[in-house]
Length: 237
Image 1 (cartoon, rainbow, N blue to C red):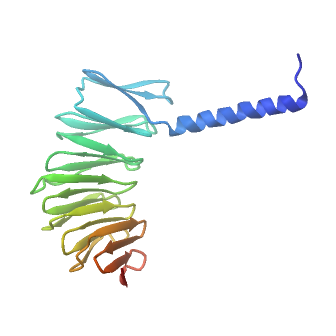
Image 2: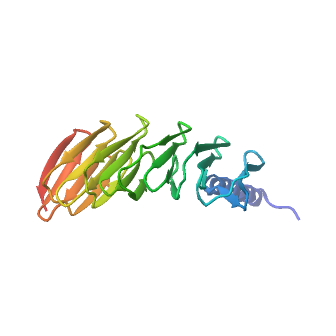
């Protein structure tokens, strides 16, 4: 039985659409990780075979899009299917980790390390004076809160920046701005300046972080910091 030209074109169009959808779903699919007692395997479709980390007893693992993260009491490893590489931070006893599209984060009780996929490097922090209480990750920034400090990773300087002697009540992170506040004051790490910006005496209750703007809400006033002009403004709430 022959198909008409119109039906043939419709059939070929449907097949092409299905192929495009399949490729798109594969591109957005999360990396597949297989963890056994003494081995970790990543199914790397570009290699056509698994990439294996031998003699590794994982205490935990995470996967996200193109990257896989595993850790034990001695080291933490990340695999990126875009570069087909395992890269590690030795002498690091991670208790947990997080992943975004371009960053991997792992932490000990008083230290944190971040992996940058574009730079293919790990950067470990100094020892904190108090335990780490919270962890945050965005597309290009990472941060942790401690009992007395807010510590942010600057991907351009490739260093951890610390705002110390600060009793963090809450914190949030965006693509260019990381913020924390206590009962009276707020601190911002501005990635466009590579500097800390502080606002005192505003008694913040909540915060909204946008790509280049931060708004702190007190009981009566909204305090807004604009990272494009590096200026503050105030409006009644």
